[in-house]
Amino acid sequence: MAVVLICSTRSLDRELQGTVLFRSDMEREHVRTAAEAQTRLAAGRVALLCIHRQISGIENLIRALRRSPTLKQISIVVLSEDDFDPSEVEVLEAGANAILRLPPGDDFNDRVG
Image (cartoon, rainbow, N blue to C red; front, side, top):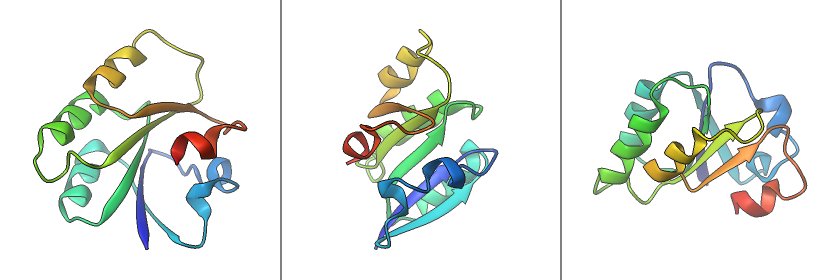
């Protein structure tokens, strides 16, 4: 079963419930901080990290993951309710695979895949 780690200070279940992330073959785990995410990722078995844009230290976490020989293969999706902000370029340059908007649009499942 694929593990999706969701890092957010609040539950995103309501927004994400109708998406591919809630398929029966997906196991979701939640953490609230970048430090908790890094600890959980180091334990292994995570296929996808979904991290809320408002998490403090997001760029540092992503850079650390991309430098790690064992964790660099993890896909990273940043979730944001806001319209495009130029600071998001930093998140992408740090190594995020995509920035997806909440609530999920029609292309959300395709982009997560």
